[in-house]
Image (cartoon, rainbow, N blue to C red):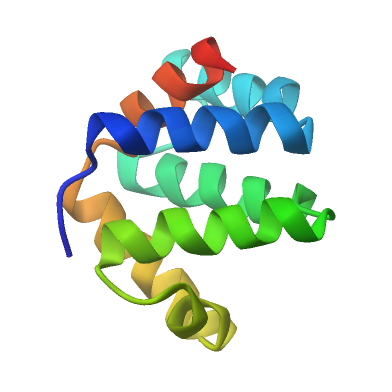
Length: 111
């Protein structure tokens, strides 16, 4: 597992723009800044799960596998083959090592 890098922000911004998830993600971020969503790790997982839920386009899905795989230092196909519980645990681990709210906030503003 590696720390989130600048290139990841741009990748996420493209995913957000293509998926059309900007408003939904911005709402979660606003709620968290107002203290309505709990701890930062939970907010980060909520953000990722929201993004996953709106990824209807196959292109966006592939981009998301590449982004998560890059951060987790795994192949995109490894991410694709995770069961849901493993995926959620991976998101939690990424959230423990990174500030996901800041990551998403920056990407949403850039999208």
